[in-house]
Image 1 (cartoon, rainbow, N blue to C red):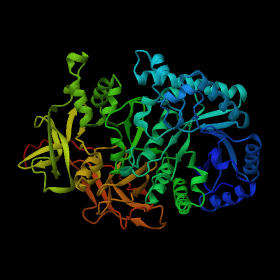
Image 2: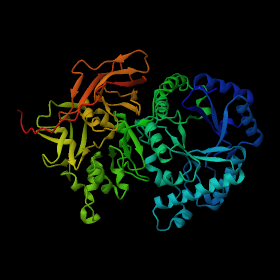
Image 3: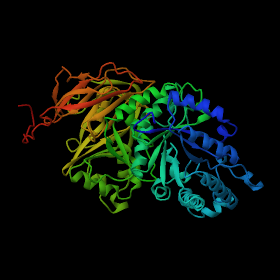
Image 4: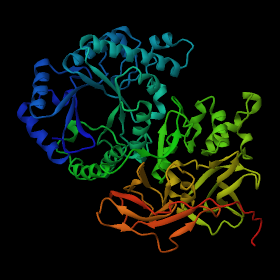
Length: 607
């Protein structure tokens, strides 16, 4: 019987891990995993890096797991040693195939057939890509870009893999696991938009590791956001998440990968890999925390957030959405523009969609709220009417960019007064977006000497509103923005009816039944008090992690009037919010949740 109700706990077993394992050794090691984290299923790999588990050993392993009530599926890593003298001239990272080469294709087919003959399901590890630029590849590429060639090549190879597997075993289901480096997929041939139609299922790599000390630059929120993005590529067919212990220091970073993966509601949590995790201390606390998350997910609905539109094969402002997610903005990543949503978030990546300006203009004019980044605006401004023949973003805002930049660590509110300034921990560099007063309004400012420059701007267009967020060049400093500046930014993302109050490096994971999780990250946390601002009248926040505990509205005002004098908000303070703790809540609304719509009242001066 599974330890968890909302997901399966899966162990990945590499060929080398299991090559000489006896049944007694397997039994001993399995008991370790069952004690500390559970083991509902294994992905058992018969081939990796040129080594194939002999059939008798493979059959022993399959039988031993199944006799102990563990579900068994296969796995395959598409790497190999040099197959001919000519392969020495190819640069194949970690042994990835040159998929252009006939001999290597034939070798791949043999490993696929061997795997499919023993399993009704197998998963491809995330080495199913190419970066080979040998003579064969350059000749085959011709005048195409590497992106164009590799996308077409890997679509062809994907069809070859699935066809070869089903020829041996018509019942065999093939799963493609996508790596964590989503911003670079297209450069190496990964293409969820096309491959979701080829493979039976897809899978999500959620290995964020230690962001500051690894080459991949992956904010930890990505363990959640990429799972949601791939789920929206193939609804119901994103099989699960996969993370490992490498580069996870302190060990809580390993656990955080699991927490955020689970918050995204995957079907499976896969731990890579058996050999690296057996008797590893990173495993020992994981089950305790996953038990709590599993109990919370019993009460939670479907994940929600402001939709961040990331078209397939896009690049630009890489992972900015994840840095904002770690600063407390709940997001729902999607490869499709949300025409029927009330709000949307666009980064520079949205310009991969050639029709984005028409979509944005209509969305806002019809009453939607769009939050766009400075990178999006600067790219849109470069696409002048003369170049595109279509109305540009100049139709919606007075913002212009003339190449000027500024540095500061002082910030304050918008409007005529703007309130007192607050200092960030670090000085940051921003693009200076000029705008025309009263046409475009400033919601938050940065101060440099006797001048101030906008970091958050508002334009009303048609029935809706365009919000521009000016982003620092150093995305990792977003967490260091003062709480007041972060609260102004969070308040513009209206995909959920509440927003976080307080400093950065804390995330909200929202669900569609007014249930949410709050998680403050380990390491580098800015000290301060956290809270929640609810849009509307709320009676209390009910703790789902501490039964019987309810938080009442903050005594400093309780129900407060929002910017503009019409919207009612309710503030709550979180007590004893510690990094690494799991905190779960439900909003209990008042009988009169919303304020009746008021008639417009002109006000040009105090009276």
